[in-house]
Amino acid sequence: MIRLFSPMNDFKLKYGPWAIIAGASEGLGAAFAESLAKRGVNLVLIARRLDKLEELKITLTDDYQIEIKLISIDLSDFQLARQFVSKLDEDIGLLIYNAAYSPISYFKDIEEEDLSKIVDVNIKTPLMLSKLVSKKMLDRGKGGIVLMSSLAGNQGSPKIATYAASKAFNAVFAEGIWHELKKQGIDVLASLYVVKQI
Ligand SMILES: NC(=O)c1ccc[n+]([C@@H]2O[C@H](COP(=O)([O-])OP(=O)(O)OC[C@H]3O[C@@H](n4cnc5c(N)ncnc54)[C@H](OP(=O)(O)O)[C@@H]3O)[C@@H](O)[C@H]2O)c1
Image 1 (spheres, rainbow, N blue to C red):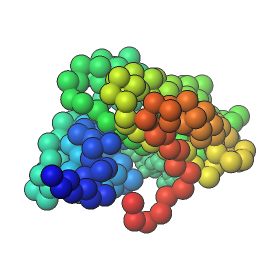
Image 2: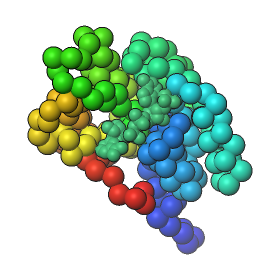
Image 3: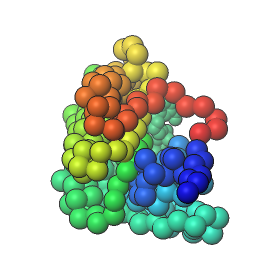
Image 4: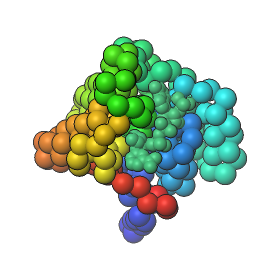
C-alpha cells in the first residue's frame, strides 16, 4: 500500500482535528483561524464579540470544508473559560492563545483594576488553559500550544511596563514547557513578532 503524505495532512494529523483560538474575532486571531482553516483544521473560536465571530464563521465555512464552534466569553475570567473549554467533546490538537489586554499609561496613573486585568488576560488564562488542554494532549501523545509574546517582552518600557512583563512571562513560560512537553510529542511556541503572512 502506498501512503501519501502532504505538509497539510501532516499538520492536521499532528495539530488537528480541532484547534482552539482564544482571541479570534479579528486581526491576528482571525488570520490564525484562516491559516488553520486552509489546513482543514476545525476551529473553536473564542472572543467577546459574538457578531464578529459569526461573521468570521460564515466567511471561513463558505471558503473551507471545516466545522466551527463559537464561544463568546471574556477571557479575563478563567473560571468561565474553564467551564466552556472543559465541556468541549472535540479532540483538541492545538491551542493558540492570542488575546491580550494592553492599556497604555504610566504605572502611577493606571488603575489597580486594569493591572489585575492584564494579569488575568495575558498571564492567568493562557497559563491555566495551557494546563487544561495539555492534559488531554499528553494522553493523545501529540499536539501544540502557541502563546503570543511580543518584542516588548524583551525589555522594560515606559507606559506598557505591566503588558511588557506579561509578554516576558509568556516567552519564558513557553520555553520551559517546550522543554518538558516535547518529549511527550507536544510542541510549544511563543510568538515574539508578527510577519504579514502567517
Ligand atoms: N498588534 C501587534 O503589533 C502585536 C505585536 C506583538 C505581539 N502582539 C500580540 O499579538 C496578539 C494579538 O494582538 P492584537 O493587537 O491583534 O490584539 P487585540 O486586538 O487586543 O485582541 C485580539 C483578539 O483578542 C480578543 N480579546 C481581547 N481581549 C479579550 C478578552 N478579554 N476576552 C476574550 N477575547 C479577547 C479580541 O476580540 P474581542 O474584542 O471580540 O473580545 C480580538 O479578537 C496579542 O497577544 C499581542 O500581545 C501584537
